[in-house]
Length: 123
Image: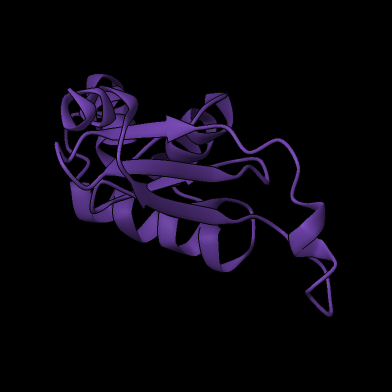
């Protein structure tokens, strides 16, 4: 990958991220220092990093988000009120045992009925 000023700025900004981020987050931060950068450049750069295994992508509410680390991304969606909550998955040992190979990162989308809606149903 040829190094340009844009790619150098993009790489610096991506490396600063310590949580999930999306292309628009990076774009808005770079735009301040480099007002001629286009959003398509950001998307292409992130795609290249993903292809090289330097970042990981997940779907979050129908949007692609990225992570520098090998993190897990999990949601619980209520079937009644459609509220989406991010949940933490601490152990994935059960899944590692089922996979022949190495688990890198995962995304889980669980669906059910939230506590609030269950109270309404039982009332």
